[in-house]
Length: 299
Image (cartoon, rainbow, N blue to C red; front, side, top):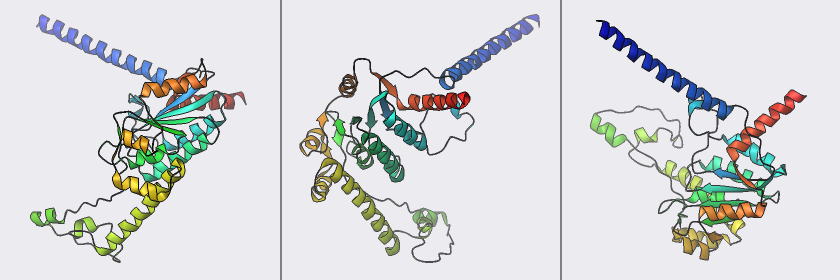
């Protein structure tokens, strides 16, 4: 019995030490990540990774701050680029892209923010391993056209393939399960529940989707044509021939060079000056918040 008690207490002590260690480590990480940020360098090139989806609102999950990577919000990104365009310490911007899955509305907002930054006269550079490989890379390239220059890895591809709309239909599955959905529809163009009551696209639904795609396609083509200095007809021909190899994209004038990421970063840093440092836009945005708090406290 005595041995059992000793073993139990030893186990309990070990578990307690582990829990204390985890809590201490978490507290240290939180203090480092969300405490007073380090001062920003006097000369910096901002870096931005746009491969992951951006958050449109703050996470509601109370455990979200324990994530290992801080996710920028769209509004935070826009504000940071706006401030950076007037910040004499910021000498440029380098962003990493891919096919991206932000959604067209967010993509337009990010693109507008980058264009505003680039209009300040500071260089804005886009780089990608590949825009979508053999799949669609339309959204990522659409954002990239807001930058002064676009660079692609030599072995990459430009998946400029046009737009599609996909609508899932589960009526065959419901039929096999013996389920019949009963939904009252006010008109043929109220298509929200077509997936569960129709076996395929109705004429009204097809018309709406085609109109939506036509509008988005015109925006995509217009943006590429304006940014790359090409007639819309030429851009449409390039989309029809996509996806393009890196060499084909360069020959078509859709990218400015074929280069690896370290080369692009080195060029941007060299152009900014010998003392320039690379600073993530997330860190820059966090520091801006701290500077704002410092100014408010001083007032």
